[in-house]
Length: 74
Image 1 (tube, rainbow, N blue to C red):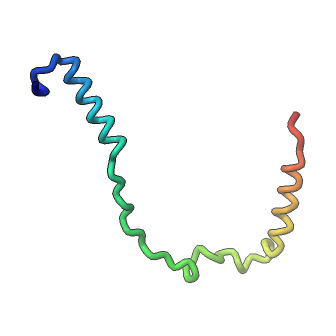
Image 2 (cartoon, rainbow, N blue to C red):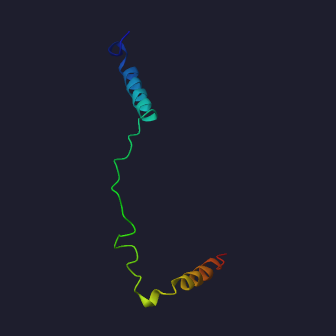
Image 3 (cartoon, rainbow, N blue to C red):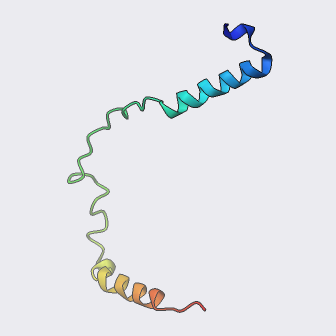
């Protein structure tokens, strides 16, 4: 018995099953090689280091977190 001798409905079931198996056993291709990123010398890192208004940002962030996280939404 070959595929073509099956009724149309059975042929569709075979095709669906093959698609299912392809998806289940798909070979995951490794991601293309990522470019080397030099974070130490990247201009984005430290771009605000000269901002005096952000010198004490840790205290500000902690204050915002404490205020927001302590709220009760009942």
